[in-house]
Length: 391
Ligand code: ADP
Image: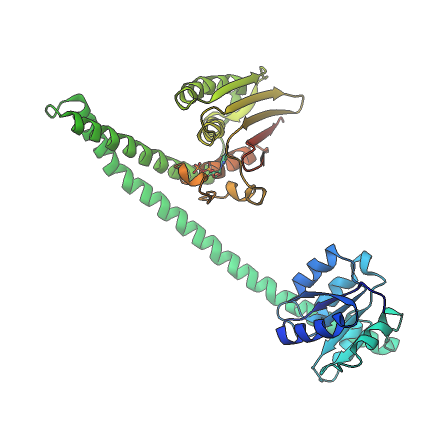
């Protein structure tokens, strides 16, 4: 037996997995195990097994469907696929072969002969069906497959409609909640201001300090609520596009950001080339630009640097916001653009926020036909790039 001959075994039963693995490894085969069809297909995609052994009764995609999918992979063309089943129902062998298997073994496995049986297939043995039988079985198989597909599509459509309804209710609830919370907060803010101005009588030093802390925290709450309300608003309303100068808007925001960066000890540099007129939603773009700048400052510790660049090309405007901050792991680069998603690391947890800013940014930029992407590594800083196409 040649060393390193690789068998991919797709089987959900752990006892069978162990048995086959032991038997084959004792004969110098290398055995890869996948517990279901999709994982088997994924493993087959990234390896080149010499033979694939598929249990027919696996959950989800069954062995027939898994085989049909594997058969369509060009790099597996020479690799035999062998069905293994305890299913003694009439027609199972024919269905396996029609679905693309090259052979059919029944359980219980013959421990003394399994390696020989597989080796025969690796050496070229093929079981075949007479043409007329194959055509009939194939037709039945295809019909069953389409019936299953139809059932699944129907179920997916129902589930999707339910999810959409839930999403609508969630948005409605969030909008209601934000409105309801804003009223009492406005009143709290008003009283804090009266205290700060001394209108309600003199305060001791520690009372003044306490009022400042209350004021700051209420402001933070108001900011979060405004973001929540804004998320609902941008999702449900159309853009109001007007001729504007993106570089002027960015320059204005830069002076705000510089002031903030100074207090946290972050260096800011920019390279903003004047843009030609662009048709954009001023309010929405200002939110998006400001949020990217805010995040860059927020997630960059003192001593770090934020670099902002804007270029105007023939067909698009590009904004790059680069920081030397804490960075984001690659696995989360898509997720951070989802509403309410925040990176759950001890580093990121030190920063306040509700995780909707980037969802708004993405929505706004995509509504302009553009895209926003991130390149980032933990500890190596982040670069957010916005591309706004013209025309
Ligand atoms: P939040 O408003 O809470 O900051 P965002 O939607 O803006 O939420 O961002 C989602 C998450 O993405 C943040 O909680 C943070 O972990 C991560 N993130 C966003 N921008 C940066 C950045 N410049 N550097 C590092 N992490 C970032």
